[in-house]
Amino acid sequence: MSAPSTSSWPFDQPPDGVALTTTHVLKEGRDITHVYHDADDHGWQFHYPGEKKQSDAMVVAMKTIVQFDPSVQEVADLPPGWVAARAGRGAAWIRKENK
Image 1 (tube, rainbow, N blue to C red):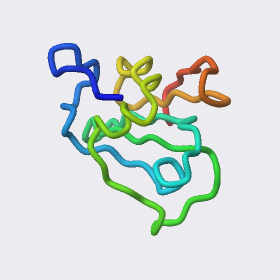
Image 2 (image 1 turned 135 degrees about the vertical axis):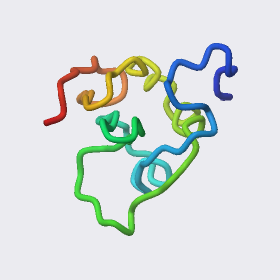
Image 3 (image 1 turned 90 degrees about the vertical axis):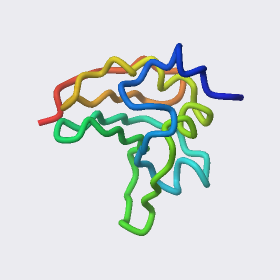
Image 4 (image 1 turned 45 degrees about the horizontal axis):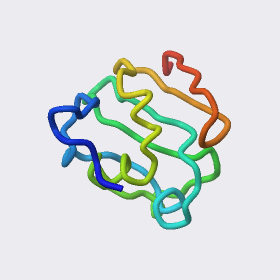
């Protein structure tokens, strides 16, 4: 599946912009259950809820995340400094300020 065209791209970062995730998501196929929109640099992070080590971190293009799980586009309007969480792929997102 390909990423949406730039004209319909919903995030405030471009398709080739940087996103943070882990090997658990992209290499092991775990569901993205937590999306963070960072307050300081407006960056995006896409995670699952389990234990993570620094060595698990991956820096990828935003479009790679959307290709892996297009449903993350549902939270593209998440304000900086907020997090969206869900139980698993297909579940409803719950949004809250990330304090």
